[in-house]
Image 1 (cartoon, helix red, strand yellow):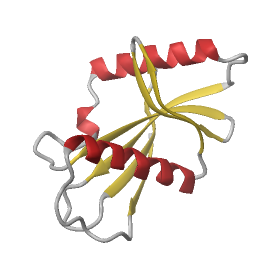
Image 2 (image 1 turned 45 degrees about the horizontal axis):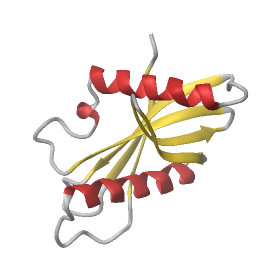
Image 3 (image 1 turned 30 degrees about the vertical axis):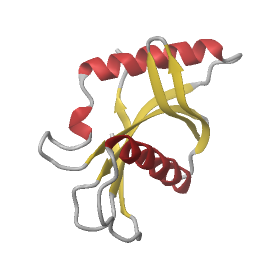
Image 4 (image 1 turned 180 degrees about the vertical axis):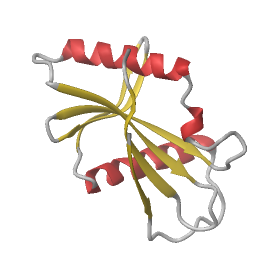
Length: 136
């Protein structure tokens, strides 16, 4: 598991937006962050009966299913701690549905996570975790 972190040079928020707005803002930041790290976004917010994929992107020849997790405090362990076994299983099922729609399967598939931490006094802290978990 490799990890990249970055502090964005944006001004601090004066008042936190509503939870839904915060999630949408985190996803937009995550997409920009992924592009800065060489990913090519293929799809966002893909919904299936079994779950949703936040971002589907290519990292070179690897198709990545990227989950965006956001937290405004560390009270519950931060954004990465919010990925439970149940959440992993939903992501895997949604990824399988997505793969069924493709004409040709990619050689490599990976599950990544972008964690957006809003708890600092300044700009949000983003962390990219490649190969955050494996499919059994």
